[in-house]
Image (cartoon, rainbow, N blue to C red; front, side, top):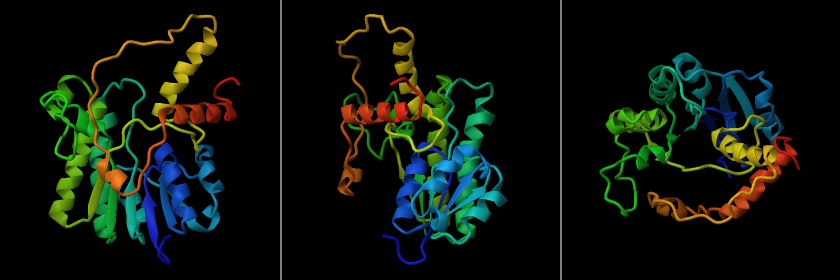
Length: 269
């Protein structure tokens, strides 16, 4: 439970991860400042339905590239979760402007606002893509905190989302070390499960597209057995499990996701 009067800020409040985070925080008694592009947008209405939200949640209109708007949301907070980051669902015409700048400059704006507002601790939600894109990492060796995606390789291969998350986390760590900011980063991988928000996030869209194909072509003889693919990078979750985190089995996660999509009318029952 939260210490009496403790407040935290959550950026990108309307997204998948942030929505679940805010639901947990307000249920534990935290006062939450959530940043969204437009507090009046119906796609953020689910946030106000959470238990204790009427007393504990305040939404702020903010843009990651607008320092003053971020500072207004951060003021008065003891901690901050930086979750917001552009996640393109398709190719973009100008990745430097549309993906990289909001991720890197936006993260630095958030951290500078935390310094100005004397925030005690910051958690940056990065991504496993800041770890896995490294062609020089020994095959079969577990990927841990010592491994970073190769930004030059990401650029050459046009993996701009990978580049943006790697650069943003790297700059965040440099800033924190230089300015004495208490910061930790978490690098989740594929995030699936029931949605709280109305608008599907990128990973939910991926699963929805697979489900829609079967709806459109119900008589197609879909394969039921598959050959083993190439070996995937081995990511360590040792530290998270040490904190008491437990994962749900994939079968259970997929089943819960599909039932949630049915309830929201995103797929046919």
